[in-house]
Image 1 (cartoon, rainbow, N blue to C red):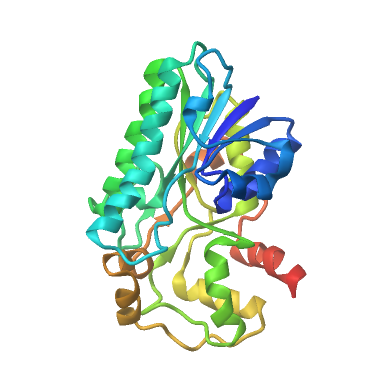
Image 2: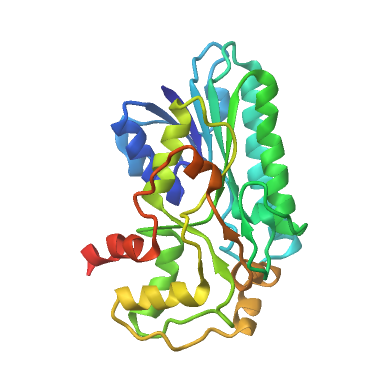
Length: 301
């Protein structure tokens, strides 16, 4: 399949594109930085910087839409919150315009979302794909992102929405945690009872690849391992794998100062369950946190 990918130079994209090549697909990477993409992927991948570089008669078989500013990269201001929206909604809307003008519509689009769809929360409610919603900024961001992507269904495209949790691998969120934990200064954030729903990047990538070629996949899916843990449990497991202590708590006020309103991302959480993936028969390569962290961290130590 010829597959157009937005956000291909991000953490998930950097792991996804080599897998697509292994499966014999032909990736076309849409990026703002052609130089960065070519450095990452070399000549084996076509790189474009504008959707106008795709002609109306070109055959695009699938689309993977991962574009979006990092949700916890900067302190949230009103300007930053708007940038988080624009980077997701505008790119998705531009892809809708592409599909409209293509002579042959793609067969499938796998479009990004997040477990923030369920809102940032303090309860222990187990959330499948029909889970109860808390109507906050995170929910509204994801809801608008998904709604824009679902417009492709009216053009005959099979749409899969991937509500992704914390993705663990070399880089990404884990890379930000590791320096403190390696120094023995890691520990829970605030009380530590907030839920963390995570997924190993290999499972994330494998599910996306399956969605491209398996017609039974459609609609929204929780991309999280079945073993959600609290932040305190995550911290203990990470420290144990590194053979480090886990005693220093990060006060909530520190997170508030760093992220402002965005502190809800770390001080609250969601206990998410991948009900539809499991019912579809997907077998997680890394179903529990200890196995996932060992695979990521032990070879490097």
